[in-house]
Image 1 (tube, helix red, strand yellow):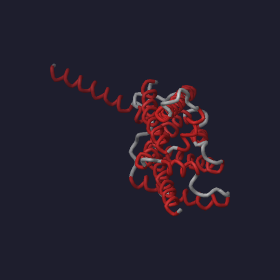
Image 2: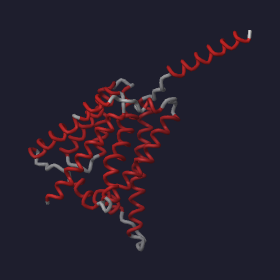
Image 3: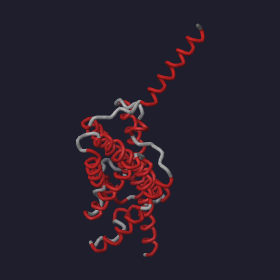
Image 4: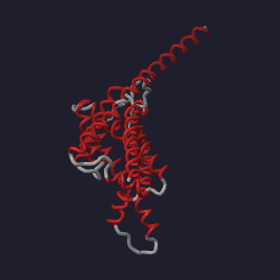
Amino acid sequence: THCCVARYRHRRVTRAQGHSLNKKPAVLGVWTTVLLSSAIGVAFVAVQFGALFLFELLEVHDHQKVDTHSLVSNLGSNGLVFSVATCASAIICGALVWLVTRLCGSTAPAEYLGFQRVTPRRLALWLGLVPLFVLASDIVEPLLHHPRGPDFTLEIYRSATFLPLLWFAMVAAAPAFEELFFRSFLLQGLRNSRLGAAGAIVLTSLGWALLHSQYSGGEIAEVFLFGAVLGVARVRTRSIYTSFAMHAFANFLTLIEVAVSLRAH
């Protein structure tokens, strides 16, 4: 009798474990995704301006009034301010994305957000598209009278008093949050609606391009196109690691170009 009871309990435990392993993460609805994304976007702006405000207070501590225009312009002219604001917003808002995904019903946020392994060969194939995209941009931009290396990137590189932090912000922090937010949380919620994967890729690429409003019109168009490539990579490989690696690699190549350009002049 004891053996029968033991076997029965073993079958129940095995069956329960099998159900838990086969259980898929809950999918957030499209409107829930939009509302939560808006809240995260507000938090992102708040953290960025919070970092700017702290820097401004340190610089004008002897004044009673802080110039709001100076706060905004510092983000596009001060490499150190940009680096700190980018790192702070990436850490805080990245954690917020994970938290709301977990609290809103997803029992497996890592799987929902695309933290899936991708084979080195497949990753290398997608990474190979990045230099081709950068090369195409180098060829097209002179035709559009936009020299390679946007003024924004040149300015923050020139004014960065601590270059390693700038490199970390652009190659690691910014790609990590932007891929987590746009190509994971937002794309995953939108693709399960009537939009489908294609519509979700277009909308998330558009939102990502608008985030880079400091660039010129032609450069924003490039950001949109590259965002679409990242979206396709994310959907095809089902992994955020692919789009993150491509995004980080693109930013790395951009900084290399900027550094070479500044040294040449």
